[in-house]
Amino acid sequence: MSTPRRGSGTPGAPPGGDGLPWTRTDALVAVSAGVLDLLGFTLTVQTDLGYVPVVGCLLVMVAGLPLLFRRRAPLLTLTAVVLIGLTLNLTVPVPQHFNSTTVVALYTVARTQRPAVTAGAAIATVLTSLVVQGSWFRPGLVDALANVAAGGLVLIAAVVVNHWQRDMEANRRMLADRAVADERRRIARELHDIVAHHITTMQLMAGGARANLGRNPEVAREALVTLEGSGRMALREMRQLLDVLRAGDEVEDEPTSPQPGVGDLERIVDDSCRAGLPAVLDTRGAERPLPPSVGLTVFRIVQEALTNARKYAGQARASVRLTYEPDAVAVEVTDDGEGVGTRHPAGSGYGLVGMRERVVLHGGTLETGPRDEGGFRVAARLPLTADEGVRR
Image 1 (tube, helix red, strand yellow):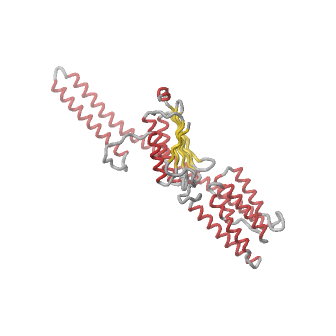
Image 2 (cartoon, rainbow, N blue to C red):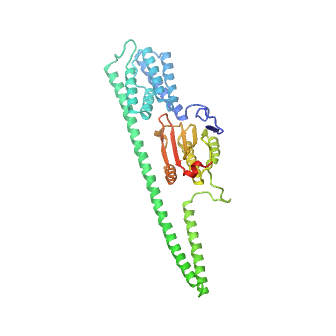
């Protein structure tokens, strides 16, 4: 049974903050490509024909409009651009080459689609561009080679950029994992030093106090005083270590509030909507109390995923799904923002590493990565014990 809870954003609304289904970057790319193509077309036909056909200028400008939707529907965008280009080729008696609009549309397909789809799209684009007015596939040899070379260069550029970004992502993950591992070892050493020294001292003092309790109360009292001081010092040093770990956090002037859990998911979804990322919370299954640590882990995963979406997804929408299973609880956060190529350009990756560590501590699984239809997905499943699973 599904009980959707909605934030202040409208789930069916376009991702643009101003109600438009494209970003400012998409609009800038579309306008720039259209202006460049219009200038090139005007100079070409003026030189070859001696005049500038108005219909051709209109088609050139219209060809840039589909680029507004290139991130959401790259194949449809390329199809629209190619069809408009075909109409232009059959309308104006001047052979057309790969223009800026076609390059951007084909490059977007190559960046986001599978190799087989990209190859088919490139072949179709090149063949269509060879159609000229009054004849089919009979352009000059130079024009044909130029179009084939242009299509090949676009594909090569997309492959190189994809490979570079994969390497950057792999290096970023490696550096994040190494930093986390180094910090773990440092904390482990310091905790070992604190615990080993003070606990050993406390054990010896406790043993001495017990041995002298009946026959020499004064010695026992001194041992207990030393034991108390050692415990106080151990507590102070551990607090100092925790303060180091929490460096940069805001000072807490008020008493610490209870740890958040699944009951606070609706609040952070509403906060996300107010921050500019429309989001929806969907709860499925029979709701029941969860162990505090499990509820906290679910909350942190959703919080981190929504934060990443606000930082890197651009104009997007998000969806949070919480599912109560008989022996587990699952949470999934998805968004429909920009593709993986621009998703985490400079993030440290510690957020995703922290998610994975929390899930592993509970014996669960975590999946993160881009979606085939666009956007990003974070999904975790946390198993529950027999008693926790049947609790109502």
